[in-house]
Every structure is written in C-alpha cells, then in structure tokens.
Image (tube, rainbow, N blue to C red; front, side, top):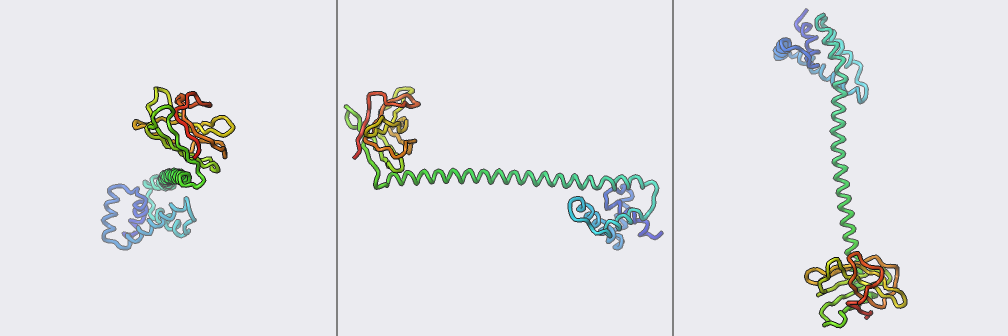
Length: 254
C-alpha cells in the first residue's frame, strides 16, 4: 500500500470533519508535503458541496457522488466503519438544519423589510392627506365665489371678532376668531350656519386659546346648504344639536 492509499480514507473523513485528533495532525502534516493528496482533498470537498446542494436543488453529477463514496470505501478499517457510516447518515440532517437556519434568517430580514415598507407607505399617506388638506384650505381662502362673514360680539365693544369664509358648492368652511373671551369649565363655543328658511346647522365646536384665538377648518356640513348668516353660542364641550341662547356673536353675509 503506497502512502496515498494509506491516507485515502483519512482524506474523506477529514473532508467530513470527523477525523480523530492524532490522525488529523498526521494527515495535515502529509498534506503540507503532498500536492496530490491536497488536490484530492479539494475534489472531495467540492463533491460534498454538490451533494449538500442536492437536498434543495438540482441533482449533482453522478461521478461526484461515486468519487466520494469510492474514497470513503477506499481503505477498509474495521474499527472506523461504524463511525464513517454514522457520520455519513448525519450529513443530510446537518445540511437540512443549515438550510432551515438560512430560511429563518431570510424570513426575518424579509419581515423587517416589509415592516419598513409599511411604515414608509403610512408616512406617505399621511403626507398626502396633509397636502390635500392644505390644498382645500387654500382653495377656500382664494375662492372667488366664497361667502365672507364677519362676526362681532353683541352688546359689547367690538373687540372679539370672527371671520367665516364659506364656499357653498364645495361645502367648505374656514372660521378664524380673535380676542375671544375665556370660557367656564366644561364649556365650549359652537359655530352655527344659519340657512334662510331652516334650523341652524352645527358648524364646529372650538375653545379659544390663551390669547383668545380659535380656528375651525372644514367641519362636516350638509351638501350645498345656503347660508344667510353665521353665529356663535356657548355650549357643553361636546356641542349641541340646537343653539343655546344667548347668541354671543353673529354676522350676516357680505
């Protein structure tokens, strides 16, 4: 038996990673000096890679499997047969576990990417909503057919003031107030759209800030309701379905 035949089985076991420590050291020393055995080891490793890929991909060349099997069976050693067979049976399970781990890692990465895409889509939707709201405000403020109403306080110096801009065809309304008086606890101001021949329509509940300023922008309104005037009353915080007297501010169309 020449030296290459002596190391034939050791090369196969070394490629599988199951060679014992003393024999592994001896083989590694031999590989440093023997280019032929080194080439055979690289071929065995390549064959094992093809066999591993065969569990989830195309079938490797038959010559690769046969060359690996011939190398493992090349040197009969009775005391190593059980170990060789045991490790050969374990190889597919090791490959399957590696593939499963790779699948889990890929799934987690895909899940993170999907979450990020969902976040970006949500941000884009919010930005589009804000842009649309800004466009509606500009359209109302600049509409040539807008009804502009100035509301003033009744029976008091004309310090508190409100401005209503209403576009009937779009049912859009913007109301701006200044120098409004402070309100009692659990109370709020409510704006009313007053049609010519119908009951007042609620047009938004608001509370003035510390400077008396307030804004109502595009509250829910019935479609194309004609407005004769606008008024303000003091109501509970949740608002009312009909005005509570007295009316604190009122203005008719210009």
